[in-house]
Length: 372
Image: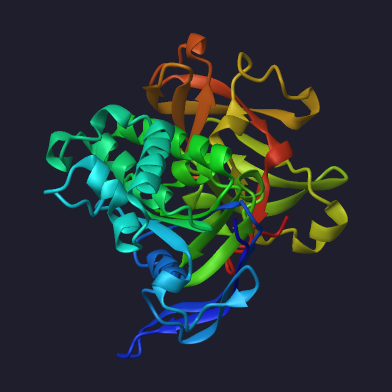
């Protein structure tokens, strides 16, 4: 196991294009770090810099407190699993797993013990004599992981390893990787564009955009308290609802005026009135997760004081099995809510939704940063 520190790291390519702009991340021994973001955000570049495949323009990358900027990849004691598997098609599964051991001249009897141990861990013992072309996508990914495991490194690096798999296999392999981490306790850095992978796998998540870490923290912290509009919209499926409007006085506190086309209502907000009173009359954006806009059948675990009824006209419904997504208009923008399927909502009908403001987040529309 090994800790990882990324201190004020910049990367600029020779053509002058900046890719990373002052990245700072620290994880402890055995933690699972997710680098998540859209295409071009710099997450794979950062992973390659940790691996030693890309140079650091400025800043330091430290493994177990030792700066590794000038160390070659082979001297960093890390193993990498790629999106493309990178298996040798003419070799058997056994030979693919033991290839790195051969290069390091590990004795044959020791190689066999390592391959047997790794294949048992990944449940691929029955595949050892097959060639990669005879394997499914999920099996090939297990073999690629096995080759990395055989090295027994201090750190694993995964570069979008599940992108080539279908939806069912992705779910299965996600569980495999998480179980593997629980068994081994080895530090993992994992790159993905899939926020579901980020939420389910990571101990810590770094959400990236344009070469900058927008927020770094535990999955639930990022989900409940996103630092800005980008993070709030990127993490979560369906993403957080954004309701734009003006702050108004509401009793002894502050509220947000809602217009659903069939009714108007002031939604009382749970934020510190003293802090926000000076912003009354200003434009704000209220963020609310779909599961926080629901119906009476689904709201049994929420205190009545947090629930505020809002009458809406249903646009579209999407049954998902365990719940139904209901789309409606609020303040001129479509929002999505999760309701109990037994509520049987119908398109183009009126419905009362319950807004749970206890988990609401307030954003500044100009800076896009969280206000409260």
